[in-house]
Amino acid sequence: MSRFTLPRDVYHGKGCLEELKNLKGKKAILVVGGGSMKRQGFLDKAVGYLKEAGMEVELFEGVEPDPSVETVMRGAEAMRKFEPDWIVSMGGGSPIDAAKAMWAFYEYPDTTFEDLCIPFNFPELRQKAKFAAIPSTSGTATEVTAFSVITNYETGVKYPLADFNITPDVAIVDPELVEGLPVKQVAYTGMDALTHAIEAYVSTLNCAFTDPLALQAIEMVLDYLPASYHGNMTAREQMHYAQCLAGMAFSNALLGIVHSMAHKTGAAFSTGHITHGCANAMYLPYVIRYNAKDAKAASRYAEIARRMGLDGTSEQALINSLCKKIDAMNAEFDIPKTLKEFGIIEDEFKEKIANISELAVGDACTGSNPRPIDPAAMEKLFTCIYYGTEVDF
Image (spheres, rainbow, N blue to C red):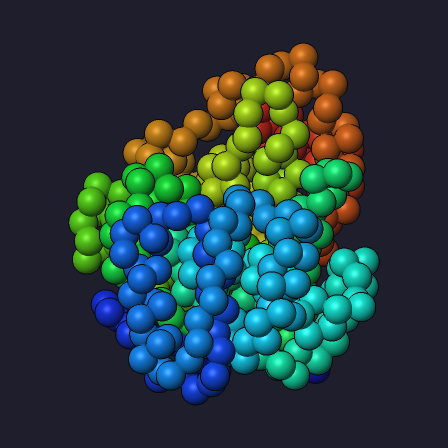
């Protein structure tokens, strides 16, 4: 038996933030990040709508990028004191991910991260509160997913939390919140969404429920991301919906090794953070070529290319067209083609890559990748990405 889970309600369209005034409850805590929502006036709007709903409102502000265990614990403590019956989180992936984890510790103060890290092992939530998520970026889709990632900075360990319990009750997908996104963020989050959809479509857990969502998301990203990047707000709105559809697909079909590799290289090198969406964009064409050595994966990549109207009469020609399309988008968005071009120092790469490869194979996303991989093959794949060489194994 398989399971397919989404939020009960997904509100979409310009101005749908106003739907907050129809939530039923007594108290709402609003969890936000670094201040962009406040600067743009959306935080005040959200507070106003929640008060219109007759609720007392408390703010929890300042959730950092890659939220920490400490922030989660502080948020859970604030919730225990305030006792909200709605947890509302607005912002990028970080505040929403943090709020999901806070929710678990609010309802179950005695649980531990070690308990929660076992996939699909959460206690039954919604004993005290429901959850509404409002994304301000067009990429992570955490507003519709069963996932959250929290970082323990003392140990350097990232806790990937996965449980259908933390799929939000309400997602408010208002494109007005993404109109002011910086263009780099538009590119990176858009390529993250494309990666979500492609990996979900070829995942070993793909199914009849996730396939249409993945294909529609891919088509919309290819159609709208370049125009969104160049400032077209109609396209920006469509990208906000495309990333949400991609999230619905991957929350249920899971992902693959593009994400495993991005997770384990993000903070691995001294030359600076490789932004998640940028890493996905770089790695995706190489991983397609690796996975396409598997016959079933090859037929699904070819099917993506065929559905998108890309050139090619043979399976291999279609796969080549798909990789070329991704390469062309990366070039348009000024995303490097190789890790060397990104600026990773060669000696440091050589020194660290065996360990990184082992960690990437152990990542939660590797299990649903369509072609198996071991640390030696992962190291070869990373080496191709570093130098830009052909994936021929």
